[in-house]
Length: 350
Image (cartoon, rainbow, N blue to C red; front, side, top):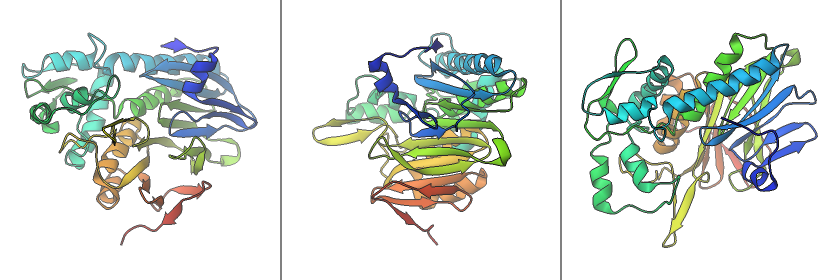
């Protein structure tokens, strides 16, 4: 965990942190939050390959900032396959060799996310690692050779992740590789929110990359206002209002590259091993569970609008979909006001 008390101009541009008259706006991710005139205590750290921004109100706010940052950093140390000796690294190394015992926090994240994998019939797959490493969106991305992609796909199978009692876990297939990039930031919000619960905190908000979690009520029972980023600019698409839970966004614009005139995004369809082609540009999901909010956003992006609706209902979640024709569809339980230009609100399909 790195504490960023002062950010250089270059880093500030990368993070896209803008101090506005009404509060701190995190616009480098897909979401940013308006806090109001009373900004509380704030800190920005770096974990999970993303900026972690917290704002906390209440007597224990300074302690809560430290606890929240530590919780996210510790979870990163458990979930990152890139960290040697992490729980996920150990589980990957033991693939095909039997079960190991995980930290309870790791096991819970896997359990929460695996529920979405199963309900979506693999539209999101935690064992996507062999394929995601080939594409290498976090490093030097390139389109894989067809034979390499086919071989990697043979090692992808969400049903091969086995979770047992007493935090036991195993990967049934030799060569299987977990990659929790699609759920880690939502899980990080869960970790920070849990840290606040044991302290005297009135209310708080935490943003980890493209996920934002809220804790407690704003004065007079007003909802938190989450500004969704316009996929075509760094401005606001509109305002989403929520009182509890975690909101996560998966968008094709977040990470991509162009090769031979074709643009490839990082949201891979586990069935094909290639970027999902569902006609969507972005999916935002609100759910009480942060890991599931993150997982659902990815699964819904892969499934497309119509196939996503029963999935959202199963997890008591709400969603906002933006398609390639700049049409926005919002599920009934979501309080959203469109402010961006060039978009139209579209009704839910019959």
